[in-house]
Length: 219
Length: 224
Image 1: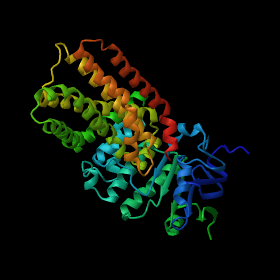
Image 2 (image 1 turned 60 degrees about the vertical axis):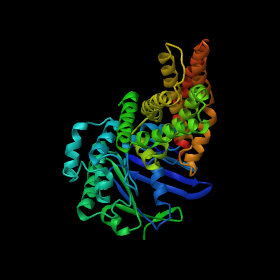
Image 3 (image 1 turned 180 degrees about the horizontal axis):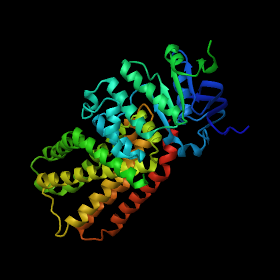
Image 4 (image 1 turned 90 degrees about the horizontal axis):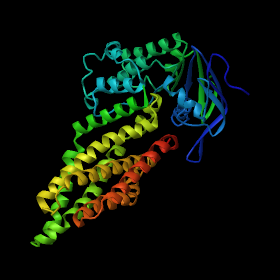
């Protein structure tokens, strides 16, 4: 079966993931279309983060097949589409010894983005005044905002959010909401996972549940 | 962004981090100089022995502590940062080259500072015209050590015992660099040709560069 239908950003067919000899995900069949927001709810240890890493092409499927943005998972095709994927993980990804502005500058340069957009992005996320703080002097929310600013510049076609609303104030949550809206308005897709189904129900067009590594329709 | 743009950006940020943290200048270099001091203290007042041993001690201390300079990046290389680089489209080979560039600058600086300290503490007798060949040997040894350290960091990425394992990989593989560097100096003292030893260093550096670039992608994928 070919998994590259037009407009389908993510498609998994009986996919499974094993880590260290242990099966973490099994029999995953899933499709996410353009401009769609999919929520996946599940308790700790159910395989949510591993699923997002599979979709981010950072983990290859041990069983089954899958395509993300047209690239076959587990093949070298994924190297070409990785820069179109935005992943917000549990831990904000920043270089600890740099300031927030320097972190954004570093990511923008590596991405090949326009560094002239950095100041605007910092303003949008509310970090214009605090951008010269070092990471160690910044709060968790500020680091999340720095990630949001990065995603404003890199404009991913597939946005993957892992417990992205946890520990954030209302303003920062609205910022993530704006990122979701922006991604879908540009024809991108969003997959968000959380242990808190209420976060997902408010934002996702479709919500699934994951338990013991298997996906099912949410009750 | 081109391959070289990515490599230069990684190198630039790495040097900026070192400027702020000062691992090499404030920690590794003072320790290495203390190690240099220990040998004359152990040898007592035999000044001729101290003078004769100087070059050998320089290479031994230089390579052992140079390994620490070369491996310092591996300690800071968290999985999240590797994932971020992958999703920003960074070519793993560009990351290898960038880290080798910044690491080489630091290792060369470290070894030259150590060379100066060796002259102060050991007063080795070297023939005239030594600075050019010795500095070239130091440069080639430092680049090779950094390539080796960066490569070992990639091989051990994601492993729990990474720091120890990386040192164990670097130490035996650094033998051609130790031989090439020390024999260049020894050949200068004996007035024999230094060319074979410089060629050994160049060949080692090239082999490590090819291995690092060729293996960067497979090693990155295997580390996840």
